[in-house]
Length: 438
Ligand SMILES: NC(=O)c1ccc[n+]([C@@H]2O[C@H](COP(=O)([O-])OP(=O)(O)OC[C@H]3O[C@@H](n4cnc5c(N)ncnc54)[C@H](O)[C@@H]3O)[C@@H](O)[C@H]2O)c1
Image (cartoon, rainbow, N blue to C red; front, side, top):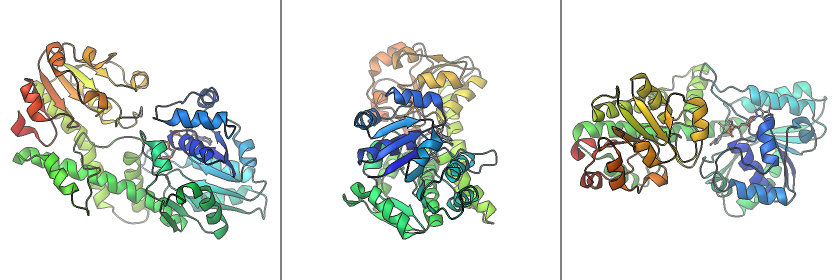
């Protein structure tokens, strides 16, 4: 059992803190956002993440999980400090390390004993060494500490499950002492045969970027294949299925659609390109992945324009706003860029999302937010599926057709099968399957 402080109580920090408490540790989750901490102290989860409420409540009630804004005090009381603060994209595309540096300074100034600082935030190769230098510069001379890289691979929407059953644990450490503690902390997962990759800190940092860039590559790759399928009358879903049956390729991340968004892939691919540029290398594949992805959402806008015969003066029902289902995260969501473009082109938008409406209202003006799917599609000239929420998968299509002004659907996530939509009398357009079905 360790006294652990987790700095940053966002998607990664809160899940990490709750799960580490569930392993039996005493965990203090700290954040500089007072409102967030107040909500957590009242057992309210500040964002949507399935299963998180239960594990937070169980451990808080069990006296193992605490929330505070007293960052310095909790650092002093802990033997291990996890860093899970944001590393957003800066103007130049690099990872903004200012929050990480802020925590490093706090640790240095409050290093009252040997501590291990664990970087869970996604950071470029070399950041652990930077953190080490910052701590060294502000801590009492001779005070020992270690900095470990332990990147996080959880996905929003299945974060608790991903943390509790990870594909691997990556530990980049430079001392046996720190490695031993990290393996003790992760013992419950190691006992269930989770592979552990032990490596140096710089390699560990690179593993995270390489993994995210590769997954992003699969998405942009299949989107390019989908775009070509549309031109040669092939069906991308069959192509992806057959490709995925090859063990060397695998079926995941081969779903054609509006492209990737969220708080990770867009910023991490750009940060990798910038790290390479600074090191004197031109990262050509990743640059193309980004460019294809940036175009893909506007290809969806073109698709809608073609399907509706132009969007000026038309009403668009936009279903799904988040970058993927099972999260309320709107960061870099394709649906938002599409909505802005529709508005610029003179369309009226009626939008619905199962969980992100309250957040969307704050960042996207000029659209009508509707209480459910059927309200959104009322009198619409075209309905656009922008996120593949489960509740969109089996809608009452007869009712939907009756409510719409024209039965036109653009399915940017290939939720429905073309023959079924044809049977229901829709002009149905999807991604990489279009010409044969319309
Ligand atoms: N979200 C994901 O799916 C995911 C997955 C793997 C890795 N990551 C990485 O994990 C890191 C965190 O991501 P997130 O999505 O949890 O971010 P987030 O924006 O949800 O949360 C970050 C939190 O850190 C807090 N913070 C900032 N400075 C602080 C300080 N000095 N002390 C204490 N708290 C501070 C902020 O107030 C915020 O609540 C990022 O580097 C991200 O790339 C994210």
